Length: 175
Length: 179
Image 1 (cartoon, each protein chain N blue to C red):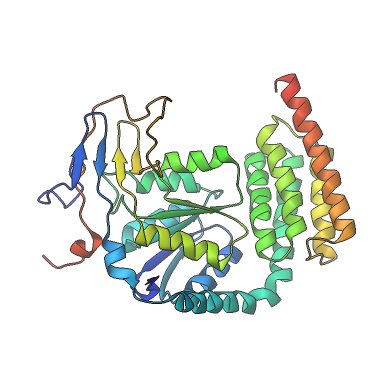
Image 2: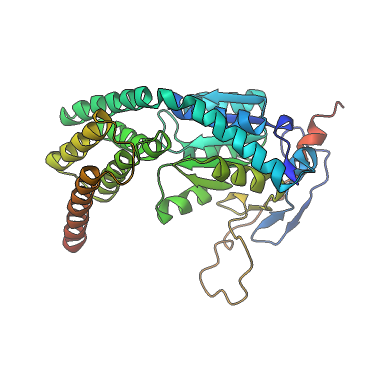
């Protein structure tokens, strides 16, 4: 079946009966690939990193806003509001992905632990979610922005163990 | 060889304004001038249909339409303005199962957060310089999910099952020419 507005164009494809293979569309390569050395690429990457660094002063404020949003979702989740589970999962996923980018790797690890639990178990005990949320809160409040903070690492290890044990229990029970 | 970002139009679809700012900062650092953004999947799809960006960067978890749903809609060969548009999914999900789901939806490249300038540049370089063939079967339309050929593959053949339709392709550069 031709694409919209392309009915006069010849197909650039091979029909194998069960599937059709279309040649790679190379228009972007033709348009946007240009000469340059590894040094040019390094300069582009450095400029991008410089742009990112210029945002860093705002990261603590952004993380505080992200956490407020997560906490709001947690309150809704506890009150069993409509779509609250999906909302909570989305906020935990956001925290999991963004925390390290925004300079809070341990908050990202705590969110990762909770994300795995919510993704695996039919129901995660509220007390376990609370432990994760509180850990994230402390990390952001105390501006723990290094990966090897001793107390932070200890808290994350405790959460990891808690998650691991719960997932193993659920797998054994066939949940 | 390098990518000339001034020649490309990007669309970022992410419900987090902070991640959109981070991505925009990186793209502008690479030299991109045209960076569109949308805060949810539905707005992203509308922006895609209106402005036909060259490359779409999409988050997975979003309200209204999530990243997978957006991808599936872009990959509709009969209704999408450009079903071949490269899609890079940026997400906190790193599980293999999730990567497979993204590929099944038609995502070209997958980038797990935290984002680095090199990680993002490499994904963009891949979709621009090394585009993969597209495959259409009864149940799939999207970039070839096979990264290489395996001569001794003995598993189930996913491409069997149903008559294939021939899809006509046309380069974006030709589309932009006035007729």
